[in-house]
Figure: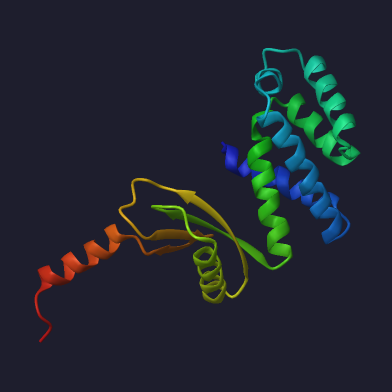
Length: 184
């Protein structure tokens, strides 16, 4: 059985394929992001659109009204209606994220998800972005999240690459080195 992540990836690839060029694909992403944001900002919309207890016709009519109000293209409207038809509307947010990764990849950008013990100063954030960019040889956008479980330092993930500069990891390495004893 296919998991939700794989289904979201397939939908994102389909939406990506609807765009004729990079600008059109970026526009599709912007529209999907706008729709997802509108839904996440309203508990009423979430209740109606993300739960299948409401009739499909009601959910589709709501999607059509939202699309018209937000200026959403026919392509994104059709994808949204498909999600309603197959009771997969909760995947909209994962599809948006997967589509963003595809659009960024096409543009030579990657997203680095950074966890920090405390908020980063703007200049420190820029230095970190540049350092990660040099490491992965691509333009990097940072997504910074505060993680109070970190003692200090940062942990960055770019795709499958994990860059762990947390104090916990540094202390673990130091402890392992001390346990091994002096190098002879």
